[in-house]
Length: 233
Image (cartoon, helix red, strand yellow):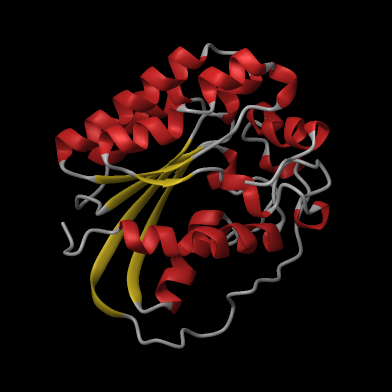
């Protein structure tokens, strides 16, 4: 894991302050590293994936089709996986918000998903919420997925140095410990691919550009593919 600069990570973690006012967000260029037609024919039954998260999933500041779930679906299909993503990203959401809307999100689907990808917790840090609450909410989300027989994947976050070693010592272990407890797939730090690359972040120094999203997808798509159950649910 690379060491990241305090000002940069603190800015990245300010994603929690972004609400749903997408019209005021900077627009990224409509370019992509995965625009070419799939090189492997898409085969097999549909693999249904739900992306439960905050503005990093909602596509803040991006054009339609450029969000992480959109580009992840394209990347998986380029590998021949018949992926279908449901984007349940809400800008400004906390782990409590994700926990509250999980049942509604799953209940609104026609079919049971094969995998739920969870990216929540950055907003909890910005608001200074106790790590114990973050852990409890993520634990409840994963427990509900366990109960329903749905595989889960956690996209982890790390506390910035300015929150202190005590906070970091309580927050940082949440994702690996819960992933182990619930047998969930894990990406230790979701923003690793863009954290030290200013050119892959929007003018707000927080959210990834379209190219930044491609970097995140390239860094995580293989983990997502491995996390899918061997047989569709």
